[in-house]
Length: 234
View (cartoon, rainbow, N blue to C red):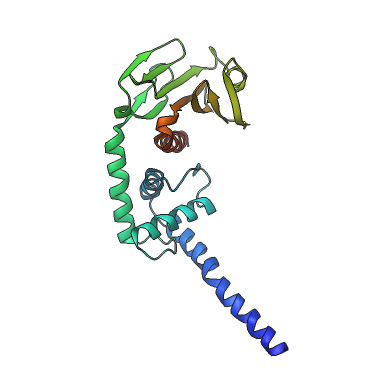
């Protein structure tokens, strides 16, 4: 009996090792990539719908899970290790996604802040008192690029306004840090994602909203905007 128990324990330990080793190997391969290649990997995983998280803190279990999901779908070894062939496929997927959404930078003339906008998804853009607004004719997507000097609107003021309640507005999640806050929820028939960052003498960010028919794309674009914007400010 003891020998049988010992054998079972040994087998269990052996079965556990590949998963742990795979995670650490995956992390090492990701952290060994150039910064540009890391950004490509993250963008491709967002485009595939495998990653719905901020990649501010480097390699995480969410990123590992996303890599393995991509590998499984592509028929590759699902160990999370990014080799040359996988990086090539991820690079192609990222480039196709950027082209499909028409990603281009917009700069706020007053503060110099930048936002990578999926311009091809919108029909019009116009300057408003709140910021640069991008809209669609069908009303299913909208994006507001906000950037204020501290002398006009403070970080605290924007937090109170954007996280506060309003008629038809329901806040599902809100989190405030010293230099960043996020608010998500719904407004009337649309969902929204807001991220604001305090950088130097200004507070900059965006609010992106999407209607139910655009749920899949809305989730992807909100993740894309958050990661691209956070990376821009680092």
